[in-house]
Image (cartoon, rainbow, N blue to C red):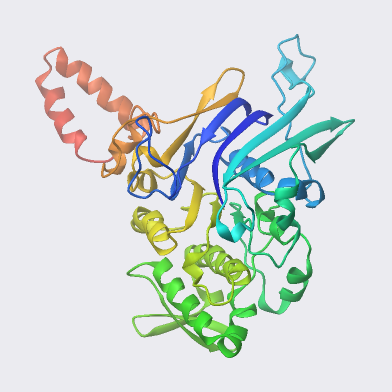
Length: 418
C-alpha cells in the first residue's frame, strides 16, 4: 500500500494539517505535477518542526485497528500549547499547558492486490486521548473489517517499515529471528525504531545464510539488490563470509561488516534490515522488487559523505521502484537531487506549531550554497558570522569611496579566515 494523504489534528507540533504524498500510482494535477522520481517524498525543516513527528503519525495510522495492541507507548503525543498566563516557572519562563482534548490522525491509503482487500482505497482513523497522566491510542474508524489482514504476521499485506535516526545493528550472536517471526505484531516491530531509540536492526548474518541453502534464487536477488542500493564507487557485496560475518570488498580489500566505517554500517544496517522484511513478506515466486509498500527513514543522510548524499535517493528510488519512500534530511545535497514536487517543507506556524507546505521553486541541479539560500532552507548567508560581519564592514566602506577597502573586499570574498 501507499499513503495518499493524512490529516493531523492536535498531534505534537501540528495543530491542524493536511499532507498529500507522492507515489508512483498518483495521478498528476496542475497544482502538483508528477516528479521524475514519483516514489520519493522528502521532509525538510528546522529542528523541532515535526519531520520525525510526521513519520510517527504515518506509522500509527498505517497500523490500523492493530494500533491499540501494538505495544507502542504513547509519550506526549497530544499537543501542548504555550501558556500565555503569568508563569510561576523558572525565571518567569512560559510553561506548556496540560494537553486538552484529543489528537487525531486520519489517513487515506491506496491498496494493491498484495494487500488482500477488495477495495483500492483504505481509510484509517486513530485517536490519542488523555487518561490522567497517561495517553491512550485507539482505532476509531467505523470500518475495521477491511483491515483484518493486518493482524496476520504471515500476510504480505500492508507492508510498511520505519527507521529512526538512532540506527544500531544487533550483534549476530544476540539476534533472535525466531522470536521476531513468532510475534503477532510484526508490523509494529518494523516501525519500533521510530519510537524507541534502543531498538536495533537484524544483522544480515543472522538471516541471509539460510537463504543460500533453502532459496538460492532469493539469495542471489538480495546480493544483487545490496549492490544496487550501494551505488557505484562503494564496497561490493559478493555473499562471501569469514568467521560468520559477511565481507564487503573494495579495491581487493575485504572488510567484515563490523569493521566498516560508521557511515557504511548506518546505511547498510537499515538497508539489510529492510531486505529482511521484504523477503519475509514477498510471496514465493515473486521478485523482491515487486513488493509494494511504504519505507520511512529519519535522517536519510546520517553519517554519509556529501558525494553520496547527492545520489542516495535516486539510487533507492530506481532500485526499489515500487516502494514509496518518505524520508527526512537537513542536507541541501539531498534536496538538490530532487524536484520541488518531491519536497514537503515543515514551516513555522503560530504558537510553536508547524505548517506543512510545498514551495514551487526550481531546486534540482542547484549547488549547495544556492539551495541553502532558497526558501526551502531560508538562510540569508552561508558564510560564518564573523566573516559575514567583516565583509559587511568592508562593503560599507567601499560604498563610501574607500578604494583600499574595495580592494580588500575583493580579496576577502575569495578566501577564508585563519
